[in-house]
Length: 259
Image 1 (cartoon, rainbow, N blue to C red):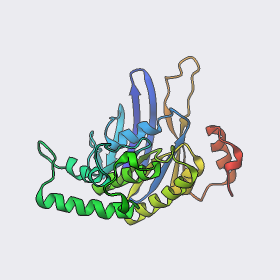
Image 2: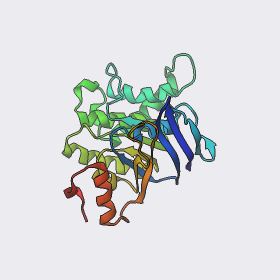
Image 3: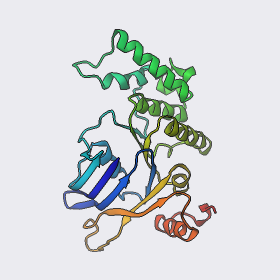
Image 4: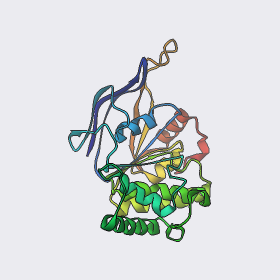
């Protein structure tokens, strides 16, 4: 479904990503971990189309990924991307309106009724059926994140991009969100890429784990080399020694490793 061929990303003289060659099948759940600033979110932006590769190719179904977001790709950020002046229902319907061509993007008549029905069905599915008329400031953090996920899914994307979506949530709420995302991944037959700083979360949610890190270092020129994928692991098939090595790279406490 998706293939990166010798992918590089530079910003001026600063190399962020280098020599990434990888392929992903439809339906995989790929989690991306690595130290802060190692290029995980940059790779997500390349997938979304808000950034373009400096060198190499990024292909979707054998064709270059479009250099602008489209309905194939939905994204959820850690900071809730919702509209504060709109109700929960209107926030989700807006995702359908913005996908329309035209000067205004407004929905009328049958198109509005269809969008409203689809939005209500999705909001019930993510546990917000009781909150249709509420505004974002009236919602808890977990509820706002559910709203952001519903927004992303209304356009029925093939690929869902999650950029540390649960980092600001309390542990109990995060556990609920983990279950929700797994259910939506399966029921909507999504291909998911999720950036997380939590290795344990990455192994729990994903079917495949990528670790981003620099393979080359120059103390005299720290920006001369970028990060690549240093580990590409199918979840559940990694030995304890490998997990310990990854945690040492990420500088995470060893007691988080589970057999």
